[in-house]
Length: 448
Image (cartoon, rainbow, N blue to C red; front, side):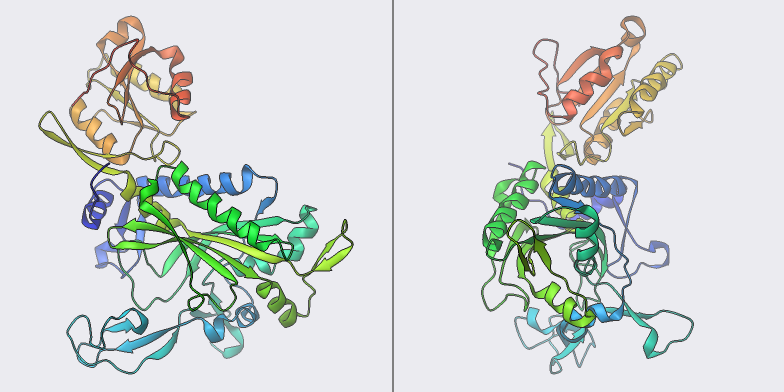
């Protein structure tokens, strides 16, 4: 098992290899804001695609949705966010820094030891104005969660999808929270992306569905490569449950700063639909034709952060090893998440190799996300691909000109196999789906 990595190494790798950059860096940056570079954008997209596939495409009881970031302000009054979405804020009287009171271990400023003010409640929603005049009637909020967009569309989705309960409605989207304290890289930011599912069930069946989704979501992370010993389930105590929740579990990950929440799975009861029905005057019930009864569904909510998931996958995949006296840094990302699936590397920039290497890349790029790299030595190029998590490298050498075969190098084992170019797509597709990389019948070596 690889040794636990510190956050500084992850931040350095992300900047060096184009995963994540500080936002507005040429202007000095903006606190807790980050930009995803070429590799990061691909990784983030793959995480979202893997979630969408598991939660929606591989099921017949969940449909997708994409709702507006700005909603009618009445939505946030009904949901309790206007009055209750707050954190206790304290100020240091000496250095003027602000802190969340509930996260402080002492009554002194963690920075300078100065005296703190009395806590006051601070609403976390970003407020803005719709229209040309800044008046109270035009106040709107940037959504602090994607869930409410699902609840207010419950009737629309049930009517148009013609599906029976239990029914899930899922979406991925940006949310915004004006956090008092941020940090730990992309773990806690003010702009973030959520993957949320609201699973509507018949009252009385909610406990069994909560148990089901807790295990389902835990298994998703394991399936995509996170080691089980770095995950844990934590049930919320009665004193920490949200006001709307009957029960809740967190899936925690062992980040460099300790155990922290990766995803929450809550039994929200019928709170949300009931609140929106009262506030809007619209009936938000479900008619069960088979049982000939009408009821307000209960809701099970698995809610995970895209950015936190990206961070966890990066940390868990990171490894440093020594090969023949040289250090190799590698990301053992699941092939489904890897930004680049296949790198095409001509042995050198020799003019005789380039045409065939580019032909091989053209053959592959319609089926896989590829990277063509002919800069520097082959060893350095292997290292670059290892650091961004590319599962397979295809090397075109001078023998390829004679036998029309190429070498496939496996990222994790460093084993190599020689295959005909005409079979390359089929072989890579099988390997990316998990077929064993067995080089015993051909030849294998650990290349530096």
